[in-house]
Length: 372
Ligand SMILES: *Cc1c(COP(=O)(O)O)cnc(C)c1O
Picture (cartoon, rainbow, N blue to C red):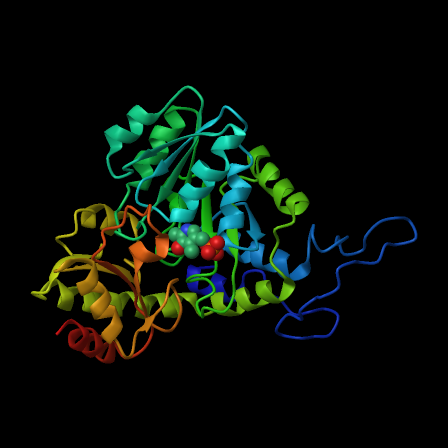
């Protein structure tokens, strides 16, 4: 099945109990045991496995081209599920420009438990190479990165990881599986905040890890999922599958609109910078064009005049909503540094934009009047 078909059919099927075309939501936490002690359908208890979660995991595995997937209650729970596989004394390399929660887990939560972490500019391959240590087990990539849309060469970093006997994981949240296939480029694992484009409607929180191989490392992630219990509800899994059916179509329009908005804003005299990998002048454009199917619906801009000027622009929007998060049908704009807090490395004049599915002309007019 090609991607668009798998997005609609993978993990789905007629419900044999009722003939339902769309899967029922199985809320039962427990499943009947046969007189001989076996389980007729393989399900025992819903923290371990649930039909709606199994369907979602099957679909995500196929969309990323992996052998196995584990769904979590949030993107952060998925990240935690991967990092907790590492042992005290192990070393992880994380990107400087990345979702702040990823660095928060590696540095603030797990360093006190004995995990070693080095923060690098993941776009500088020499810097990544020289950060490798004997105990490096994992290199964490996020591309395009949050919030500066930096582009990392996934194949090159995966080679650095493999030369060191380590694994490479890619946070594929911003590109979505419709925009980028990290496993095909050599990555070992993919992580998603399904909260974003996979959910697509800003109404469900979730995360997932997809593994190229159903190997021992993945078995340990599965064990953390089942024993740790940070699992998504059956309804959340059902909602995610419903949204994934339209992922390809949504990503096509998100990308077309973001490209047009980036091109218009690139000419704007009040902006110091427009960060969008689909612009030919973006420093990562060549790599992005090679490794992405689509450039995606996220961009960020830096407003001339500093933080207050940026806040003033955000204050004037009418179609965009001032809010954090991304990937929904509605367009969002946010002042990123103040969302991340006082330690944020994000430039104070930066606004992050999630381009939704409204008329692109309305979005362009709205930004134009806000920038005036
Ligand atoms: C939102 C996000 C996360 C965290 O996901 P949650 O569902 O909020 O826990 C991780 N990585 C990226 C790139 C994100 O955008």
